[in-house]
Structure formats: structure tokens, C-alpha cells
Amino acid sequence: MNLSKVPPIVAGMSEPGPSEEKGEHVGGGTFRVDRAAALEKLKKHQLADPWHFVRAWARAASLSGPTRVDFFRSGDASVLRFDGEPLPSGFLDSPYDAMFTGDLSAPERHAAIGILGSMRFAPAGIEVRSGGRRWSWSASGEESGDSATSGTTELSVRWPAPEANV
Image (cartoon, rainbow, N blue to C red; front, top):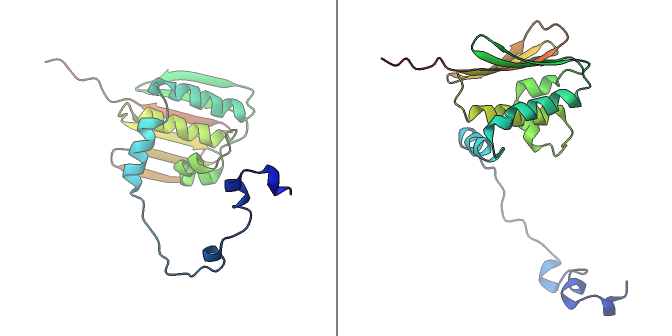
């Protein structure tokens, strides 16, 4: 490498200085992340328009190689159902982990973006069923487990009952 053509600041980076040659480990530890606070931040900063959660779910569907995608209303829920590859079972254990994989073409990442976007509307509940597994969220918490599925993936948001004008 010809250092005469490299700016001095860059040339100085190629070799450690005298104080950097030997490091001394002075301690270590762990830190905790407040999961609820982190999810609240992610919800607010994922999608400019929270209604784009439907787009994120449609992208998750298209990346799964479907032959059929349906979006419909069922009672108090909006549902996106598709065939193709199921979402990984690990996603249904901890869906938010997909946000940090860095793989922008992973269907589970877009499913997670959609979940977080839909949460901005304060829904009554959210449910994902795929590959014999189930994950759900409501104001009382999250749960995951086994579920009977029919070879499809289903993402749904249950909307709260409208307030009665008395």
C-alpha cells in the first residue's frame, strides 16, 4: 500500500498507535432492554402511515411464494390469508426478533413490521397462524403455541367494538 497517496488520518489507522498496542480488560457485564418500551418505539417509527401494515403483510405473503392471497373482513377482524411457505416456527415464538435479522427479503420481517404497524391502532387483538403454530397478542399479553392450520398462513387483526353513542 502506498501511504504517500493516502490522507494522513487514514494512514494512521492502518497501524495501532503506542497506546493501542496492548489493551487491558477492566470489566464486563450485561444490560437489560425494557421490551415494552422498545416495542413502543418500534411501533411508532416503523411505518409512516400505520395503514401500510396491510402492505407489509402483503409483502410477507408475496415473499412466501403463494399461489393464492386473500384479504377479507371476518366479523370484527381484518384477515390476510395465503398459501406458500409457512412462516418459520421461531417467528411464532418471538416475532419481533425478525426485525433485527437484517434480511430484508425475509417474509417474517415484513409480517413483524405489519404487526407493529397494526398495533398503532390499539386493536383488540392480533393473531398469526402458520405451519401448525400460533402467536397472538392482546392487551392482556402475548402467547404462542401449537395450532391446527390448513396449509395456509393467516394474519389477522381484531378491531375493538365501536363505542355506542348514548
